Image (cartoon, rainbow, N blue to C red; front, side, top):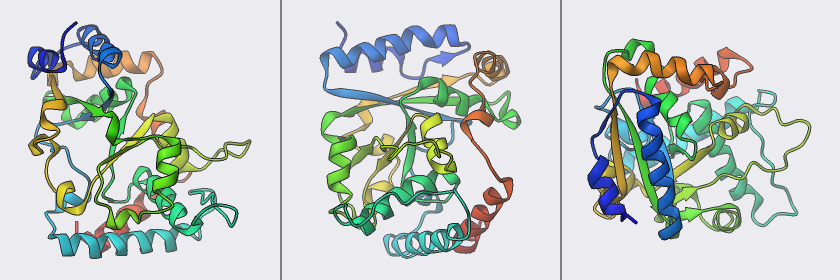
Amino acid sequence: MQTIEQLIAKYQGTRIKSIAELKPIISQIQELRIYYDIMENYRGHGLVKYELNCGLARNKLSPEEFIEIEKKLYNDFMNFVANQDDYIRLPFGENDNNPELKNKWYALYQAQHLGLKTRFMDWSIGWETALMFAVENEKHFGQDGTFNVFLVPRDQLFNSDKISKASSQLDPFELEKDMMINTPIYLLNDKFDYVGEKRISRQAGRFWLQSVRKGAIDLKEQPEYKDLLLELIIEGDAKKSIKAELEAHGATIDWQYYRKDDNVDEELKAINVKNLGE
């Protein structure tokens, strides 16, 4: 049995040219679960220069600016979706504990997948999803990307029961905990056609969430987590063939980015620009 440290040391920075080269590494990563109280999560970047942090952190805001803009983004988002049918669901009502706060969390999960800049950082338990995000942009063919693996300790995993309790007690904008959230897709029924929920489901989405102070720091620079991160390099010249192979097996970006109205994507970009000036 190899340790986490041995596996990361063995593969850190390995250059990947094909899915066939990646699969044996994935198998060894998954085997770690048998011996360690961790869960592997995956994230793909189209370029090696991208940091492991949330969308809002990339604007290099002060903590005060971060909090102020975060609230404005959320308010603008909620005002916008109030006039949109079936784009987000607010499933909690009077029979739930603190429904207003729980709906705030659930709205933010969906907002992140609809394109709003938030403090949430997307991960997936599906390695194919992460790989697709590393290779899907044809503008970046020929340029190296990254395939990131985060071996999250059990204490930071918030599955259904744990996040249900936390989201009824904690405001996400005042958070001090570190969380990897497995977002329950609530109340699935015949009308499961909400865009944000569909994207979370199709991408096997998870959310990494930290305080403003910690969320601004690249995860690779955080002492308690840097030794739990594995970064593989996806060779730029191999991206086209890897993407074609993924698509041949049904893993396409269009399927993962479920859409009902392309204009909504532009509207959310406008909300980001209004508040962040980008």
